[in-house]
Length: 504
Image (cartoon, rainbow, N blue to C red; front, side, top):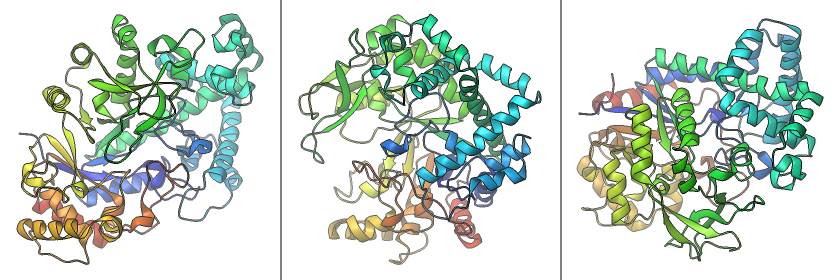
């Protein structure tokens, strides 16, 4: 029987810090200590990949499936690593607590990282470790640093707008640019070296405290990314680098035109011939970074909606099949049993559901969605779970529980929720603590894993949600305030966790 565990969903960027955004520094270590006090053993984060503030700063929109977001660097740790002095931290400026101001944070971190790189160049202290990192991560690092170098050289234009010799990766021309800009090229690699070192130190500390990290792997990559530029044959594109089809999802109850995401679609036939080598490298990389990996839009490993690139909406797309059996057989041969969580939300037909279930990965249950249907058969009601599932009160894409109850839930949903809770509660009902009622349902369910967004643990309203899907701006900015996670909250979460048999 699977061990019963629980944890908190909180992205790194949402931690408090003195530098405008959560990072791999002291507050992250303090949060691990707080989790331990609250008897939690899982910390789920969002993707660590670089973000683009000009495109909304979504961690699901990145120029690399392998690199780490430079904004998550810890200035304090740079001092500890001998790459900055305490006086250098004055370069950072002052930030208020509260939502991330990405424009100001970018300026701050660029200044500090440039200073750290200058210190690195003048000292031999990190050189051997850096060179070892270059060798270990060569399968993506050289291409990523080259991609970033060329973009910097061409005013951040998308790779398909570069001159042909760069667009189509002329080795001699690229090598000339590297030799002409050796410091820029090395700096891009140096930043990743520091990020990787800081993250692995933080992960090791979490493991020492008995806490496993749940990472997040977006199924698709950006068109303007090192991954697509370096591996064009992995995607359905023509010889000129133009996408033939793009990813999305079909029209449904929520959208009459569906969703046209615009990501390039994998050429699974070409990937099969290559024995899925790019995916093998990507999965290995994620297994190094995390203990468990949530795979976003997991159904695309079974079938996926592809839309002709000329179409403005997702209406005229079609379903295409992925080589599910061959792909996961290859993963098993390479890694054994991979610790995936399948994000299997949304409209899924019976045949696809059978294939996903046959793979054996735990799927997701969202309590907030459970109270608008049949109160006996709804798949998201706790009495219908099996142990091989992961329950959430909500995800980063949902309102908070308090916001849902106050702003979104229908009267029928509220009535259903209250009646269901009265029949399943250990502590009795209180309309002043809907978030704790929902947390109790999650923790007390049969699901082997229960994950609660920090906003729900704190009972925060709709203004504290992380993301509103379809909204381009003002997302991904929420941050935990210093001292907001009180001892009383930690003790209550610990008590519920013990009572629901999820504590060590």
